[in-house]
Length: 380
Ligand SMILES: *Cc1c(COP(=O)(O)O)cnc(C)c1O
Image 1 (cartoon, protein in one colour):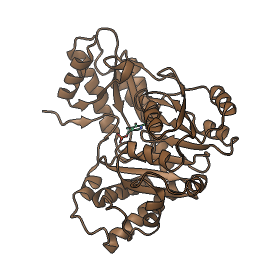
Image 2 (tube, rainbow, N blue to C red):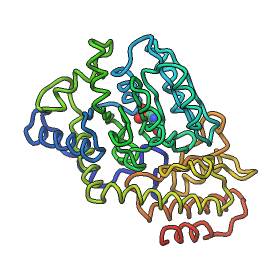
Image 3 (cartoon, rainbow, N blue to C red):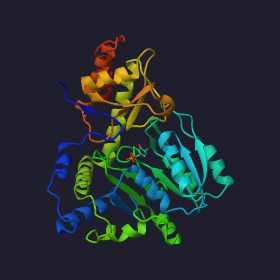
């Protein structure tokens, strides 16, 4: 029996040193050593993602972080512009409509980005409270040009810029203040390589000012005002922190510091290029167009004649678990995560296993071809 390697776009493989933190005996949330660890995590996250503002690290998933971003920057009746490159971009639509926001959507074709000129034209038409952009949409594997969009939005002084980094943060470069991002949000289980359960929200100075101007907001658990005193002094209580997951996040950040965040971004870029070249050499197509391909995952379109469920079942038997396609691409592609704390062994195994699965479903494949291309890419 082969070991199962989980290569879905989150949760991603959790390395031993992070598992060990989750397996520790849980202490009181007021334990001085824990309070110190929590505070160090908060300080490191602000420093590494470069904001003069605040960061909130609380129990919840990426979706909670999305809701937290909207809750603290808008009030019912406000205009919001949603820039969507797929399923997770679209998730903001329902979320914002339930809050009573007036929603405009700019959606790209799946596999492409929304052109900057379209965004600019829309911003000139109407005053938006916030604009949301999904940095990497997991449904399409497309990466949005967040820096360029940030520059555009800076020209509209009453508009805040929210970036969903759930499938990007710690893999794709993100600098909160420098890129003009007002709120960046993410979850623990993607490129941080931690189990699911922690939501992280960075809020730059403009976002904190906006929160102040809103007064009391209807939401309770996700109110910045409720959490700010705890982020400044984690010995205080608002709602119980996920003690072991906070430790796990701290270890993930320690790993990032040891690797170097810039080096981590470069590693992701190189790995993604090598993996994508290998997949193309095997006869697959990549949904995202060249020029907007994410480094965190690949959405891999099958050649003619391969049955998705059969292929993924055999792939899992051979030891690699991948995710299926979403929306219009259900049954047409599989999604391969290659973000976080995965290493060369994992990548070689993934491509070799994909070759074995192709062979077993009767697709003509020259065994070793993808692995050869991958290794060349990794060594270049
Ligand atoms: C996974 C993902 C989410 C949702 O995160 P959950 O932790 O599942 O709630 C949101 N946005 C993007 C871009 C994602 O990839």
